[in-house]
Amino acid sequence: MFNEKMYALGSKRSIIREIFEYCKTRGAQIGSDKVFDFSIGNPSVEPPKEIEETICDLLKNESPVLLHGYTSAQGDFGTREAIANDINARFGTSLTPNSIYMTCGAAASLTISLRALLNSGEECIVFAPFFTEYRVFIENAGGKVVVSKPQEKTFQIDTADFESKISESTKAVIMNSPNNPSGVVYSEETISAVCEILKRKEKEYGHPIYLIADEPYRELVFDETPVPYLMNYYDDTIVCYSYSKALSLPGERIGYIAVSPKMEDSVNVYLAVCGAGRSLGYVCAPSLFQQVIKKCVGAKVDVNVYKENRDILYGALTEYGYECVHPDGAFYLFVKALEDDAYKFFERAKEKEILVVPCDDFGVSGYVRIAYCVDKKRIVNALPAFKALAEEYKK
Ligand code: PLP
Image 1 (cartoon, protein in one colour):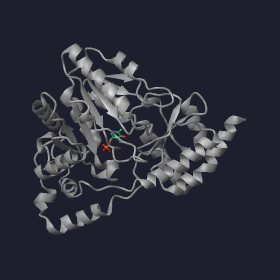
Image 2 (cartoon, helix red, strand yellow; image 1 turned 30 degrees about the vertical axis):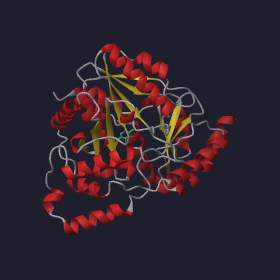
Image 3 (cartoon, protein in one colour; image 1 turned 45 degrees about the vertical axis):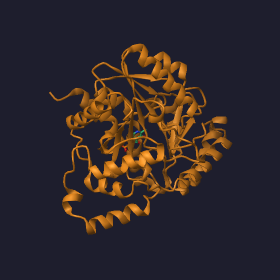
Image 4 (tube, helix red, strand yellow; image 1 turned 180 degrees about the horizontal axis):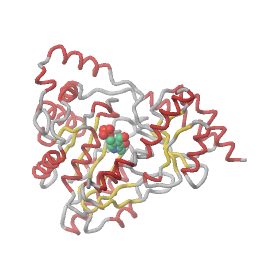
């Protein structure tokens, strides 16, 4: 008999994928321009021009072995060096190439890190609302998910609740800011408070509690909102990064893990990361894109496109009577459903061809996520339907 747990995961798609697939079918029936698909976080902004230019240049001038052959298991040395230097220059850290492990995006960064850190039965705390796949990744690493609830309305971390969730079995904490699905950026005050609690608890229990910073949205912030770099607040930090959203390259599967050199046992933790990568078969991230990243490490997408979408959508929805937290980053709006059951609200929105994601699986019920990484036209065209839906509920 094959593995029942894997069968269960494979036979039930994530809610986001489920809705995304429905959108494709519905689009084929009535025309894709009539379906207001806000389900998936697929970046709508083009990758920076220099990405395409660099790919062309590499293909023309570099050897096939460099571009298409194996690299070291942990990634090309020059790419890891370029990334370490870039992080050091931006955040005043002292990473070396041997702090960096190249991965196939943030999902791989997370699964490798969790596998490297967790022993069977150990706990990993996640802050609600959280990316749905955390549960899959943690449980697959043999860990137990512990959910910390957020502050009402602001969706910042509730530090008192967080402290109450830490136990002797806590081995890791995942923090995701800017956050999927709320778009909230955790304030420096919140982060300092969380890190102080962690330091105290490490002392009390006499073992490290690792902070995993899941940062695919780090570069997607508006109005110069600061995103504190967690390694500068807490030594036992591992950063899981990805270029999927930062450079609009989700299909290329490229990212990295950075292990803080300030961690007491950082060399051995890095080796555990290498071992976890090996055990999961995540060695040698795509070679061509490692070379692209080496040359484009400072490239940026135009976040103003997302900011404009946010402003239109947030402005209109709050005017129609929807309640939502003002997002400072990522490309999601976290909206209170107009009835208690977010699934029922989802069904009513679907009747108007609006596809949003109910957030119960993100650890908060009664909310939906709107991914506004779409063409501005889709947002503008969807507004009358959002308005009509709100008016229906008022009747
Ligand atoms: N973490 C969060 C919070 C995400 O939203 C996503 C993707 O949407 C991932 C991780 C996975 O990113 P990647 O596509 O780079 O694997």
